Image (cartoon, rainbow, N blue to C red; front, side, top):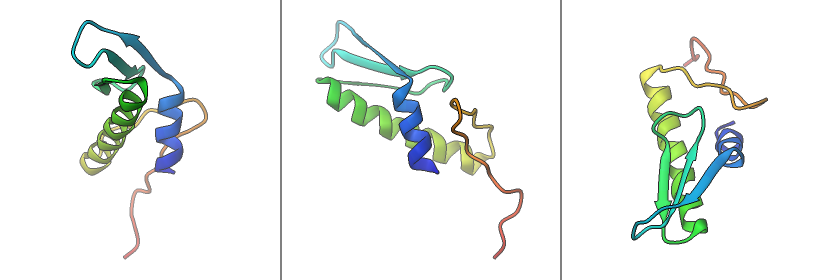
Length: 82
């Protein structure tokens, strides 16, 4: 479930070149504050995947809403059986 969501986020990510020591910049529309940069596009994608994962785990821990990405969504049960 998490892996599919991260992949869906990367599939909709947008990248651009910026004037910086890490010139590749990427972000995911709809996931506010989720961005990354890197020296190469591949490094930027890796950093962006980690940023999405961190954002997801933080949102789950805090009970924050997680928007669906196309057909991909995270369904959190109201109660987890012990």
